[in-house]
Length: 108
Image 1 (cartoon, one colour):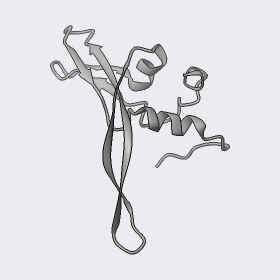
Image 2 (image 1 turned 90 degrees about the vertical axis):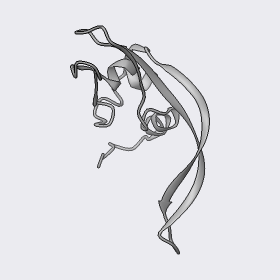
Image 3 (image 1 turned 180 degrees about the horizontal axis):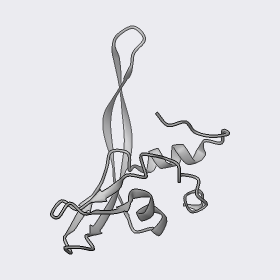
């Protein structure tokens, strides 16, 4: 959270995406804004299968644990409430980025 508030993730394009109301299609806050405000919930840890490029075969599969971050939103225009999540919004993803201490991160 400290690195998040200091602006350590401000240039991450995956967190700069905006939440869009499913009812009126109005664009709301960015994922990053919700995280900085602390207005999110941490879900349960789940085990998932992840495909990685393989050496001897096309893919290799590994089990990983992910803890989803859940954001509850309310549209400012129509008042519609919904629960939003995204595959990148996991505790592990954010922790991994925050631990990186290099000169800069290049996002593809």
